[in-house]
Length: 339
Image (tube, rainbow, N blue to C red; front, side, top):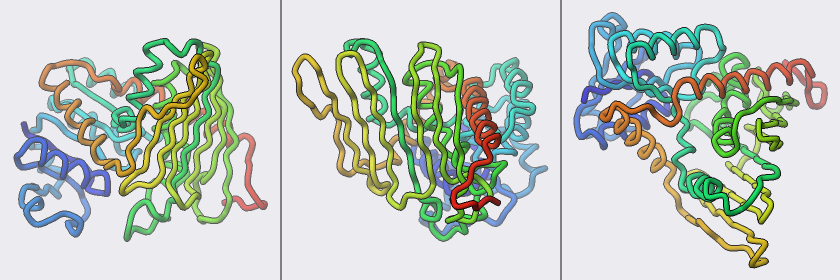
């Protein structure tokens, strides 16, 4: 299988390493910038074929490609590679705006291109555990969900000026777009979002153009209402979910990154007690990226649609941009600081 990674930033490096391990063969990487191999060992670097010239890329053929470029350029590579029959894994979000997304999805769909938006959290064992319980229906009616996610932006990419990454830019990112995986998770856990509202904040502490803190309310087609708070301010990376059901409660908390401490607890009203249903004090986050890639490659080999196609990515983006618009209408800042 001929594989390509487009964009060699932090996530591009991760995908390249995992692809080499999974496929056991050379992987091509395209980036117009000089590539940094400092975080990749010499043996792995020898298995990466570098393409710098865009015209050379256009003349090449690949079976699969992973698009890891800035959000606003995703559609360009989806269209270019999809037209040549390349199956596509696109990093989230699928784009930075809705312009052209539907047209490109229809175009690659007409060519039978297997496509998937890379929302790796769907492959996190805690999320998978919770989803299985919810699908079983033993907890009864879901009343509401509360979710939190925080990850300090300056700590996210070692040796990189955080003010220059897409997450700091209002159009390309900001915390609402950067944390779009939380929207994807909530839609996966519950159902479709039909109404939402948002308060976005510029605290001024990071001196970035995008929102660094946001509080959102999401209403789903089932009537379930969710509270969601996302930020790039807290120093210790943390994710927390609370699911309140008719017959009990599920709590998921993950802290840290390398490694991650993760625990899922369930309260059963019949037994009147809490039970730990999943725990890992040293979870390697790369495992979910590997599972995600293996799943995508399996779908390509079998010619099957993926669980999180570009159309799901479009819906996530629609919700995220609506939240950004709602926040913009409120023009909210803290301490009067606003770019």
